[in-house]
View 1 (cartoon, rainbow, N blue to C red):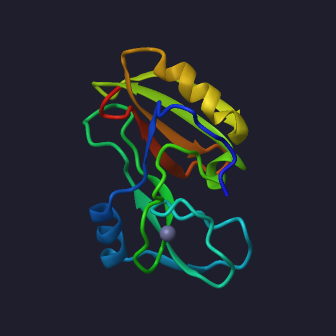
View 2: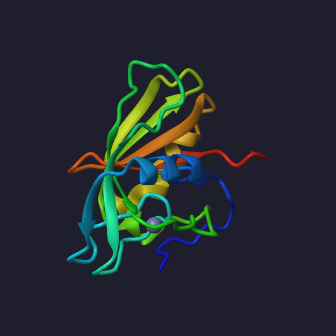
Length: 158
Ligand SMILES: [Zn+2]
């Protein structure tokens, strides 16, 4: 299911947290039943829901800093609890098969760089952005509908 092998762990995927996902599930959102695949990407497990599964569509703000860039965007979540992928150092197909807007931020959550790329090129742009030592996090959004997809950080030991 993964389309890119990483020989070194240069980044860490950070899906929506368990606490934030639970918050959205308790508060609720519009309920959708996946009627096609792919098309309903859950931002907790980073999988496209199989046809028939229930999701909620909610507004999620991935920032934890006050910053001019702070904004919420629409995301799907499985309606029932789900777990993040075990491997957080490999891009899931949910990302690699979509056109993505990739935005790099520094420690003050100010944008340092941005690009729109085909998902298969995500690794190259992440490597490029992380080569700037000032970059502490990268936000990935779907380029077409704007949904936040995942945050990418540096591994703790890097
Ligand atoms: Zn899920």
